Amino acid sequence: MKYFIILFLALPAIFLWSQSEQIVYYNSALVLENNMELQEADATLANEIQQWEQEIKDIEAEIESLTQEYEQRKLTLLPSGQLEAENEIDLLRQRRDSKIEEIYGENGKIITRNNELIQPIMEKLKSVIELVAIENNYSIVLDASLGVIGYGKSKLDITELIIEEMGNIVETEDK
Image 1: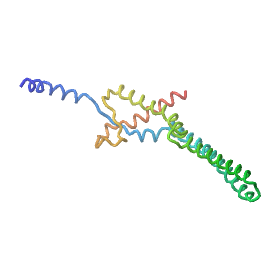
Image 2 (image 1 turned 180 degrees about the vertical axis):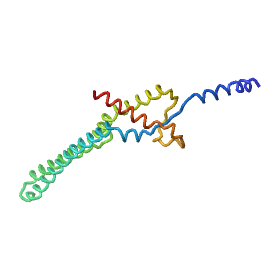
Image 3 (image 1 turned 45 degrees about the vertical axis):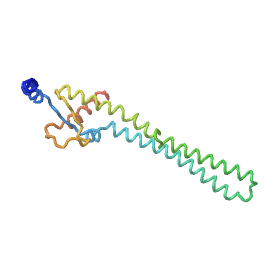
Image 4 (image 1 turned 90 degrees about the horizontal axis):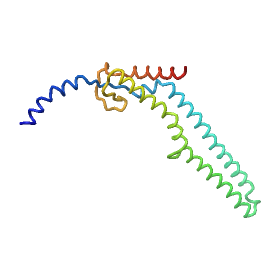
């Protein structure tokens, strides 16, 4: 009975609290899609990937060239010369495979560089969300792009505000 009375007295306070708290949402996919810094980061990464892929192609061309040369001269080489040529080709193949792993591997250059380029943008987005939440007295800001919001009134969508604030920060930094 005692718990019932406490619950009965607490219900109006809980109701009032829930009415005063404001929950809003934004779509991070749209925010990032409209972010010039992210587009620049993507272009930078694409250029670097192109350079790394060219390094691999150069090694493959060298392998192809040595293999053709070896096949043409194979019959005229002594067994020791054949072994030396085969070892040289194998070393190049290993170098190519190492380069591929270095670039595309689990902790490769692509993943590392992508994280380096995106981390400041994501930190800025987090700061903007916190700033907007504090300025507007929002209690909770959810990300709609994660698919966890089944429904939300459009007046609670602050995506445009986040995009605008992200742009304002970029303009401020450029000055």
